[in-house]
Length: 456
Image (tube, rainbow, N blue to C red):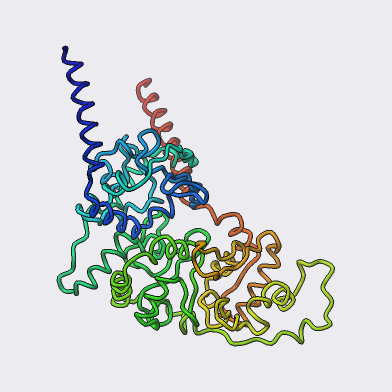
C-alpha cells in the first residue's frame, strides 16, 4: 500500500468518524443550538417562502443590489455539510466561507462576532445534526462592479469588523447582561435600528437610534421619551416582542414582523424580559425635533361631509384624501380611524405607523401590506401596490398623516416611486466607480510621466 492510498484511507476514516460524531451529538446540545439559531433569526434570511428551511435562495434587496442568501443546510453539495466547526465559526463571526471567499455584511456577522465559543459549538451541532440537508443550490449573487469582487470586503472588515466576543459588564445585573448579549449579538438589533455611514457601516455612536433599510425604516429604540421607547413599559415591550402588537401603540410590519414571527416570539419569557430591561437602561439618543411619542399623535376624524354627494374625478389619480380613505381604508379601520371593535384591526390614531416624521413605513404598509406568519392572529392588511398609483398613495398618505398622525410627516410622489422600485441605490456605488476611474487616470498619468522621464 503506497503513501497516497494510506492518506486517502485516513481521510475517508476521518470523514466517517466526523459523520459519526455529528450523528451522535448530544440532543441537549442540538436543542440549545436550535434555540440560539432561532434567537439569531437565521431562518428568516436563509429560507424562501416556498422552500425548505435554511436552503437559501431568498433575494435580499440592498442599496448595492440584490444578494441571495446561501444554503446553510448540512448538504455536502450545496450547503455547509463539509464545514468544520472552525470553518463554521469563521463564517458566522468573520463573514468568511470555507473556500476563503468573503460574505457580504447583509449577513450580520459584525453582530454575530460577539457570539461565544460555547454558543457557536451548540449552533454547529444543530445545523449539522438537527437540520435536514437540502441539495438545492441557491442563485449566485451578482452585484455590480466593483462590489462583485468579494475580496473588497476584506478591506471593509479590516476597518469595521470587531472580532471581540461579548464581555459582560460587571457593573450591570445578570439580566441586563443577558439582554445585551441577545440584543447585540444573537438578535442583532443594531443591524436594522442603527444608522449607517456612507460606507454602509453602523454608526456606533448612535446605536439603535433608527436606521433606514432602503425601504422600511427601523425607528429609534433607545429610551428617549419622544423619539424612542421611553414611554413604553417593560411589560409592553415584552408583549410587542412576543406578539408584534401593543394596543394603542404599535403593530409590527415588514422586517420587524418577520423578526417577531420567526425569532422573538419563540424566545423564553425570561429572555424577552431581559431584552426589554436592557433596552430600557440604554443611553437615550432622541431627536429634539420630536415633540411627543410617535404613538401620541392623532385623533378621530369625520370626513363624511367631504365625500357625500361629491362626484369622483374622471382621473382617479386626482381623488382627494377623504375619497381615497373612504374607498380603501374605512371598511377595516372605520370611518373615524378607530379600528375594529375587537382591536384586531388597529386604530390609525395613537399608532406609531403614523406618528413618525419619516413616512416610509406608512408608504410600505400601503404598497406591500402587512403580512404575518400563517399561525399568527389575522392582524393583516392587503397590499395596494397594484391598485393605487404613486399620486394616490401620496395623497392618501398625506391625508392620513395630517388627520390621524404626525402632521410633520410628508409623503411625496417621488419617494413613493422610489420605495415602489425598492429604494434609492447607495451613493457608494457611484463613489467606488468614480474612485476607480480617478485612480486609473492617476496611474495612467504616472506611467506616462515615467515613460517621458526615461526617454529624456
